[in-house]
Length: 106
Image (cartoon, rainbow, N blue to C red; front, side, top):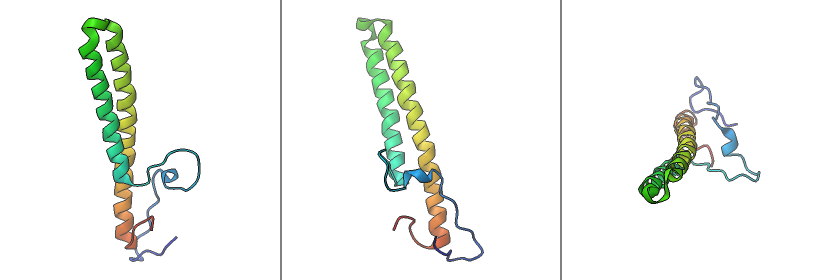
């Protein structure tokens, strides 16, 4: 670990540190802004799928609306979770740069 540029401040711990660790088989988004953009995409996808399901409900019956609600909840839930993670990581990154004077992944 690097020494802080301001010795009176402690280097903050990284939230969701597994997102930036090398290795593993899971896809990881190290950049907080990338994670926030991915979260917005997930939420927009859920809304779009729900809108398509509602638009097709007169011809398909109530099952389309139920499927649309399930997809909205699934994509929306994942999107909100990713958004919270991205915001926490962005705050941490800004604090890390303020304390140490350099980017965390360089």
